[in-house]
Image 1 (spheres, helix red, strand yellow):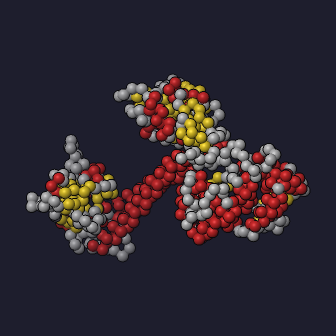
Image 2: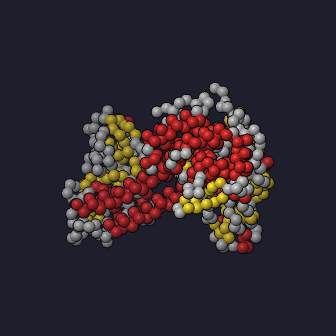
Length: 620
C-alpha cells in the first residue's frame, strides 16, 4: 500500500512532506535542575518542581505547584523561565524515564535535582510538552535509559532523540491549542465530579441520619442491627454440588467501590476454593477482607448463575424490612464505616466476618417506603457521577486519539506549506492583505447600510470562498460558531481593510458589522486579479442563506475534510462523531439546525460544491 499524497516515510514514521525530522538537541539549550530536598519542599512560598512530582502530579503542562520553598533554598536551586521543558533524569523504569512537562508561567519558579531543563530557541513549548510524551518519543527515551534498579537519562541522550516537527510555529500553536482545549474540558469534568462526590457525601450524612427528611415522611427512626433486617450468606455451594456446575464468579479483585469491574467463568470442579457464595439479584456483597477499601457491590444481574468469593459477606434484604439500595448506601457513609474502622483498628490484617457484619447498627426509617425514596435520591446521584466518570474516560481516550492524529500530522489543523494548486492565486502576497481584500469585497457584495456584514457571516463566507478557490481553508479553527479564523480579527486583516479605506464599521440598531468604504474599488481589483470575477459570482448562491445554515454547511464541510484526511467515510454518524469529539462543537448537536436530516443535506451540498478529487460520494 503506497503513501498518501503529500506524505513521506521517515525514521519516525509517516509524516507530511513539509514536516521535518530534527533532534531534540537542535531545539534549544540544556541545563540541570539542582537542590530541593524532600524536607525543604514546604519550607516557604516560592513555587518549585521536584522530579518525583513530574511523575505523580504533572502531565504535559505545569498547571499548578505542589511544593513551595524558602528563599534560602531557592538560592541553591535552578530558576526556570516561561517556555522551559523539564525532563525527569531519574526514574524506576525505562518506560517512564524522561517524562516531560512544559512550564508556561511567567512567575518565579525553580526546578530541583534530577531534572534536565531544555530552553527552546523558537518552537512552541506547549506543543513540545505534548509531543515529547508521545509513545514514539517515549520509546526512544527508554532505549537510552541507563541502569536497572534506578534508571537515568541525561541531556546528551535526550539531545539525540528524533522528533517530527511542523514547519511553522503557527501549526505547532494550533495543535497545542486544540489539545489544550481538551485538557481544559478534562479539568472541568474532574472538578465537577469532585463537586458531585462532595454533594453525595453531604447527602449521605443528611438523609441516612434523618437530619434531612424527604417530603411526605414523618415518624421516629430506630437503630437496628443489620442482622435484624437482612440475612447473612443465605445460600452456599456445598459438598453435594455437581462437579460440572458452571457459573460466573466474582472475586474480591473484581469489585471496585460499587462497580463490577469483571468476572470469570468457572466450573465447580476447577473453581477457586473461595467460590462458594450463591447470588441473587439485589444481594449486597460486603467485602470482609480489607473492608476499609470499600470494595462492596449491589449485585444487579438478572440472568445466569452467579457465585462470589467467601471474602464477601452476602447480605440479602428481608422483604418489607429493608431496601437493598438503602442498605448499600450505608457502606459508603461514615455511619457504617466508622464501625468497621473500629473493628479493624490495630490489626495487621484488616478483616471482619459475617457476624461482625450482622452486628453493624444502622438507623432505619419507620417505613420501607421512606427507605426506598431515600435510596432513589442517592442512586440518582450515583448515576449522575457514573455518567460524568464515563464522559471523563471517553474524553481522555479522545485526547489520546487526537495526539496520535495531530502530533504525527495525520490530521492537519493548518494547511500544508507550499502546496501547489491550479486554483491558487498566481501572484504571491501577504495573507493578512489577502484577507483584508476578501473581507472588503464580501462587505460590498453582502453588506448594506441597513444590514452591515457581521463577523460571523463574513467568516463563513470567506471559509467557503477559500474552499472553492484554493481547495482548503487555512487557519480556520473549530470554534463555537463553526469554522473561525481568529487571525482576521486579531492578526490584522480587519484593521488593514479599514486603514486602507476598503471598509468601515457600521451599526444600525442591533446590527453591526462592515460596509464598503471609499477605496473599495482597489480591493475589488485585487480580488479579481487573485480570484477572478467568477469567484464572487459563485458566492451569490449563499446570499439568502441564514447564518445558521451557513454555520451548518461550513461546520459539516470542515468535519468532512477531517474524515477524508483520516480515510474515513463521510456520513451523518461520522460527521456527528467529529462534532461531538470537539469541546467547542459538542453543543451544536443539541440545536435543531444540526438535526440528522440537516447534516445529511449539508454533506450532500458540501460534496456538490467542492467535489473533492478522488472522494467518494457521501455514504449513508
